Image 1 (cartoon, helix red, strand yellow):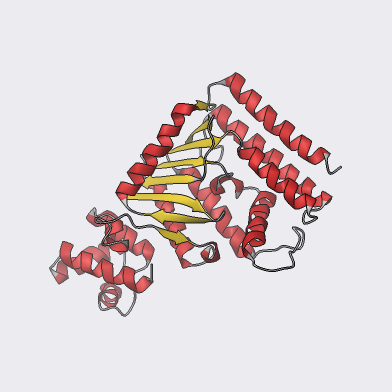
Image 2: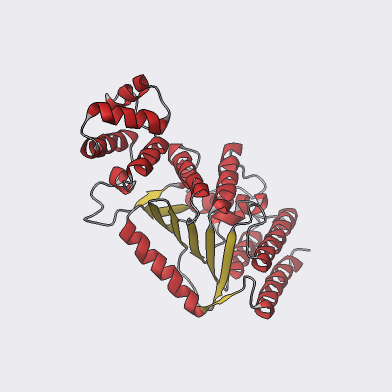
Length: 321
């Protein structure tokens, strides 16, 4: 949403919550650690409230952030597409600042079902990140002449955003992943396609191979230990025996509830509506009934699963050497 809309909705909510102007200014100055002059400038509309400031205010007043962003969300479920093009923009920065608040909530949760490797994990691996960015531009660039994987570049600022997301999502108190059992097969099929049309060279395939094998090792260690090595926060990984048609993600911390549906590979349709969150959360948990937990249990199944993924990767790359 536009910043001016956020500002207008926030002012309306503040006036309703604290009608007394003096009391309102005192509360905002204390909550935002600002001089009263800066608060008055915001209340007069000379300086807009930032998204991060809005979140702090919502926490202080115990008001749903949804009431600022989608004031009509009690009537309908509101979804908006978070565009790949804005990945380096203000909206993405606001979101990263928002999920950073999960560090302070011992009940925070990050729950995802996936048929495509999750952004929250593959962004810790440069070659995999580049591949998904490369695939996106191939599908959406609209150009007749396709550039190769080697020629493809994206700004370093994008990489910094991805790294921030990778780091930030490791601080949730509890993380649950439910994966389609063919999740690696789907990726290998994509790689085979791009190699067959000469957009990925043998050398580039080897780079991706190293990252993909490192990714498998990383996930296997998480599933053995039951936590992220970076933060020690709890992780549960399930492998589903049924296929998914999309990635679904639910994020919970403090009074914030966000639900995402992965769209167009790197975009997502997202909502702050709590009803939507509950429905999606129930859906992801229902998938666990047809899945096998491989985190700190199911050692035989876990070992077999990861061995099969390594064999799948080896078979792919045996074709290019």
